[in-house]
Length: 503
Image 1 (cartoon, rainbow, N blue to C red):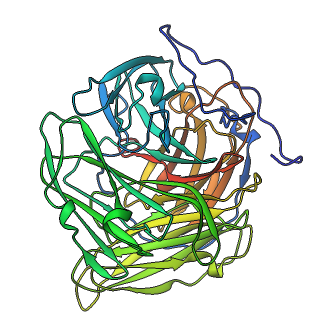
Image 2 (image 1 turned 120 degrees about the vertical axis):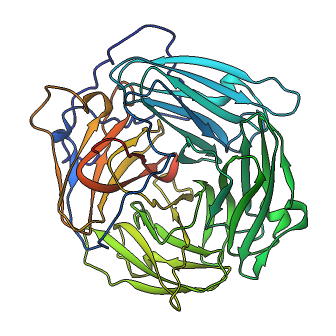
């Protein structure tokens, strides 16, 4: 926080039950714990408005939050390592958004003949706990399932690689198709697809790519078996050689699975600079015509690139809109994406320095056809630590009135961006999870007023005893994302939509 920013009061100890509690966290030095407390008026709300796209619809997505009164729920986390020599150390973050105690069972599946290992933790209402996967089971290919009982909870995970972190939501969805838009296999880079099958039957999958050189279907990645209760990691650079732009499609002939992607760089020269760090993305289960990504910044020499992947056999015309937080309106860019091709748009080419952005991509009919695409954002920056950092996330295809953010315990600040993509003004507020459904509470909480097509930012950087999950509520559907930046590097992610709340 800067010297002129007010400080929130210390976070009280969470209420509630007994049971074993774990607060193991990633630590490499002094940690600034990122916490949102009930008196949100003490936060700094940077409420600069700007223009954006309008018109939005809500559609179901089972990857979102379970209902508030749900008895149990299962979350799947595909990427990461937990062995001593692993290159993407994984920590699971479990966040309660319940008014009752929640019990979470963390199961790590090593695959093969190895037996799964489990650990149980209990969370008080509105509490959050971090569980390093290696503390449950050290294994080269961990597939993680988190089952929660007793109330609604959200699960995300944090990966750490070479001084950089990546943050992404886990998912409640297992599907037959998964799509990714951004990737590269240039020399010295590493692009991994993590395919996790948590079920009792084997899955058989085909993996294909669209690249600079067109569509590719490597023979070794067709009819690939992902054994039951196992995870398989595909090093894409071994199958798709030296391509600057790589987008992936995973299709299961039989069975269902969960797919995540990691892109890692270790001082890799990409032509316009050097990249280091790790980016993590949960795949999309389908292509779509509208994508919204409320995360990205040109702070710390930041650069924002949007990948648009078209897996169809028809060209797509895409309107890319950059929404500035605290800046002027920018006209949309018309981007032509060839059939079975991928295009990367340098979003920050027209954005001033030290500016936060949100990005929307709307695919228009090309030659009378509606062509859906997949949109994914990659950010690069040089934080105060002096080391390079990268972050990545796919856009959201849904809007909701409530979004949940499990706060990662890393050495850095969390910035929450709220985007109003609709045609009506929106009033939104940020609360600690334990205060969302209270009957009586503080009356001095800050609210964000968002005009149609605008984005606003709230920086949450308050010292406290332990992290609490953040909930964004709004009177009309919005999209919420967040950026983590600091000594532990940079990460971006879309928050978890609660599609039941507010209906």
